[in-house]
Image (cartoon, rainbow, N blue to C red; front, side, top):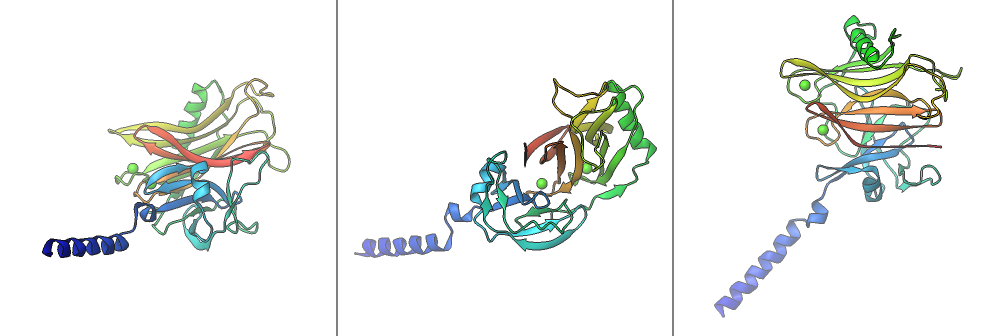
Length: 279
Ligand SMILES: [Ca+2]
Ligand SMILES: [Ca+2]
């Protein structure tokens, strides 16, 4: 009888405990990363800290999630996102969160469905005329066949991405052919290029890590290679709350654009996820 009572008591304890401790499914923390400026495009995110690609993240968004909204250097606000929609056609695999984007806001806003500080170290915007960084890009362009490079730095950021106390330098340089509207044409001029790279000290030596790169030493319509792309460094944010900052780059060509998230692991840039669509 005593054993029976103890068993009943134990069962009661187990059932109460199971009520108090959420099941694994409930305990999972799903955090979306959204390109707010890109119309609310779901780039990807994390589940229990593990990276999820856009197509894995999209179906997990229910609507009503709270997003911290960031620009390059600030958390600019908090917004509640709606459900997702898939517009179809050229964007059939792409999810968009409703109610996050409004056309009167600046374009480069990133939404993170979490409240950790995604800017643990705030990037410093450096001068685009620094001779040191111009020399870095000039040498890179020469190595890719552009003999007399017309170096145009478009953004230089200094930030300690990995939190080891040493700052990395993120460099964006672009020269492309544009329409009068400013958008890129389907062909290129000789010597055009677009690059995003990270300069990082590894074991006392400065290394160059390329995130996106494109060189057109000859120019013309690149029938074999497709139309030229341009790349824009958007910023660096801690997208999974581990204290290390990932880097976001926007790519574009004459019929569309997309954003890509990179983790810098040692000497490598790892493409984690992204989203976008074009014709
Ligand atoms: Ca560092
Ligand atoms: Ca991180």
